[in-house]
Length: 433
Image (cartoon, rainbow, N blue to C red):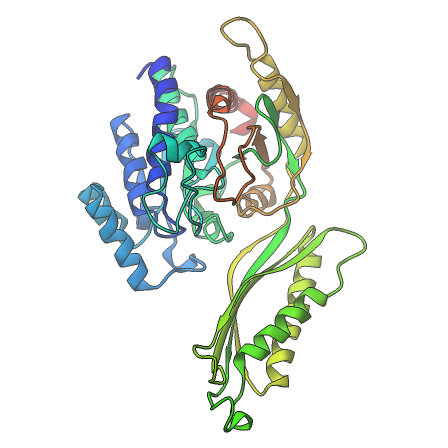
């Protein structure tokens, strides 16, 4: 593929991925499609169980759901040989450059969609263009489809130009939503001196690039299952143990927890369900929530307090309470020296008409949210390397995680040219050896 073919393929790949939206750990079609494109470029991706520590997966769906997603991928034409290699795992890793050379840089591109029903309004471009999600209750409402398209475009561009002096590793990561997937790919960044993750949008307009996000918040995602005893709600309520009341009390208690005066913190319950009939004391309820804080210490303390609230509410109503951590990521911040270099490279790039490729480049931006790229960042930094989290501006039709979310695809080609420049510069830099 030449540069113009790659440029034309970017939105096409994004639309194809958008239409096959798959939640975390069920990205079988997506993984197979990514791997097939990489193979078509003459690369040798590792997929599924070849790239993932299956014992480190968090928030894993049931075996039945995984099997159903795999069957669906087969029915939608996923390559059988690739599915066989994947086993029950998703995700892919590919190295580009001389096999004998060390890896100078790892980049993360997330694959998964959200458990959300996409808008079918005629004003919504994916619906109008015929590439809205074909999977009910799952859609790309955060931009991961575009991230994956960027990863594929980067692989193609790096293959068309001069051979790299050192290798670049592309991680196509499953299950970012819920910060569940990075821990299972952690071995893929061990000993690598540079790491970069990129997210599209996040409040920055098209034409803007921020190369060093700070304030990635530590987060713990948890499920609490309350178990009680069913009884007739009128004849013998005293014989029951109301799991739903216990869970509702816990919800209010969680939101009453004080926040911290010396840094941002968040607590949120996104789902509460239980019971089955209006005249039966509920014997089971499930509460799903999250805590976030600007430091790992605050986050640990907030989750410990949340645990106390959950267990205390259960004790009030004579209930059992099983708390499971289903996702977790630390706090993180980009290294300023790497962010400065990434910004310098962005400012040096020009369009074919000689204008700056980006209207505005900044070296620092406050994240104010969580991403399990922080797992990779902290691991690389702990080994003495440098890591950055960049935000590629895109004017959005609606906010992230909204049913009518859509992005401005005009951001893709400039973002891709910048990523190529980053890879070529770092792979040729003796300081990263």
